[in-house]
Amino acid sequence: MTQAGTAELATPVPTLKRRSPYPGWFFLPAAIIYGVLFLVPTVASLYFSLTRWTLFNSTFIGFDNFAQFLREPFLIKGLINTVLYAVITSSLKVILGLLLAVLLTSQVAARGYLRSVVFFPVLVSTVGVGITFTVLMHPTNGMINEGLALLGIKGPGWLTNPNLALFSVALVDVWKGVGLATVIYIAGIVAIPKDYYEAARIDGATKLQNFFYVTLPLCRPATVTVITLSFIGGLRTFDLIWAMTKGGPGFASDTVASVIYKQYQSGFYGLSTAGNVVLFVLIAVLVVPLTMLLNRKEGHQ
Image 1 (spheres, rainbow, N blue to C red):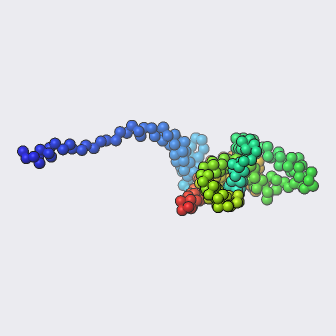
Image 2: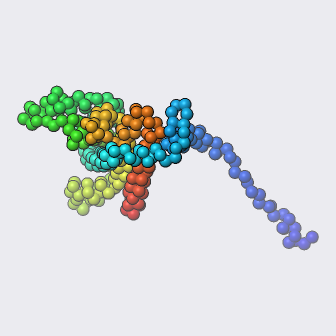
């Protein structure tokens, strides 16, 4: 045997090592929870939206539920209210949350106490907040209108005026949710390196210039988070509106979610399930492009 042949025989042949499936088992509990709590209800909703169903039986009727739901006379009003409510609440939460975060990250006195006060409404029950503000906003005996009367101002019917009801509920929603936006902005502001502010100070920047050219651009990830969470929450809102106005007066403050609930109350389960699918599609159509746009602009910066 030649020397070359001996060296070839001595060279170890690489073997393919099979990856152990063991690490994959750690994903199994999360996959089961995700499947049970999200995938199964979603698929079941899609199926039942195509049926006329009760607790005991169901009849497949195709897209009749969707056609009937979209013919609902107050659905268009509910859709407009839903989008308007989401835009108002998310915009105000972004503006007020950012301003409060700037204030609460400065050297203001009792900063820790003020942070607790701002965040406290987030911890309170939404239904409890709704009932409380319903009493406070009573047109004749409410504390808000009585306070305005002391100043010689006649208070409006916050929840009884069809032109004001939706905006009144939106303001209460902002009061309750601005604490979470503030906390997200505080986390974004304290993560900004101090070097930027030091460089701006050396360049002679004022506090206003610091805000617009340092704080605001570098808080963009927090802004994207607040806009996304607030907008989705606004589109899905139901509990606060139901606790304060039940969609009234008339149908003035109805949203898609409250229209769906009224269909459930009337026993039209298939119709209301189709409404849930419509709401799901509406949220996806509005939020996915918005999130992609915000993240793309963030990447460019």
